[in-house]
Length: 371
Image (tube, rainbow, N blue to C red):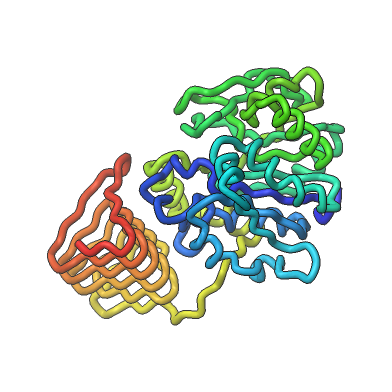
């Protein structure tokens, strides 16, 4: 299967409610991650690395940040005269309601985009999973097993996401014989909401479900067709993290402070993103930085330990940042202390302030807030 024969579809707003603190001003796709990336970068890079040349991004609301980030798709070599990157927002109020209520409704509303696409296959994905997956392996698996649908799954604690399904029974060759809705935090083979199938099959299934008034992608397309279609499961191994809460977002970021995890995620294949021209990070004479990711443009004069700082952050003298995540352009004044905190963009923490959370419940400070 050639990558340029596969159409990519990304749901940008799927499961925004998982981390409402951060997605209040942006989509799940544009949530910052890992010191210099957005969540969409990981799935979009996987598509491009596998040779895919046309990607549609289904988005419903709060997509200004996403538009600023992806632009015309140039960082991913998707700025093209033909094919390339397409934003697919709702075109009227009725369509917006359909986007909100179900994935089937959203896919029905982009039926014109699907019909005009010449690719034979379609790969559908959310942005909640960060992994070192090689999509070319999925394409090969799908062809070798003559599958109608290939669903990606991982073995771990079931994410607390809407309509989260788990693989209850799977044959030795990978064919799925039973799916069920999973209970959060239970060890299971959970479906990662990434699916490969023929475009014509997707169009037919979506049209049938829409005509019958069905609205659940998982129940009405997957579960009801297990006996009719050859549905296979491809297991995602290696580094896999699914964002389903503020605590899991915190843990997934800090997993990258482990060198082995970092290399596994970023060295297996390039992760592409929008690059900002900025000076290298500056470390003052009194600075003390340990086991942290510090992006370009940061100025560090205080203490930073076990933390992730995005571009343009400034930490003044005698300030202490521990076990925290600072989104771009945060300013931490002298003698301030942050521990187990997440600061959104352009947050200011004034002189002498102390904020302390916990690893299971970090303190979140909203965009542009001054404390």
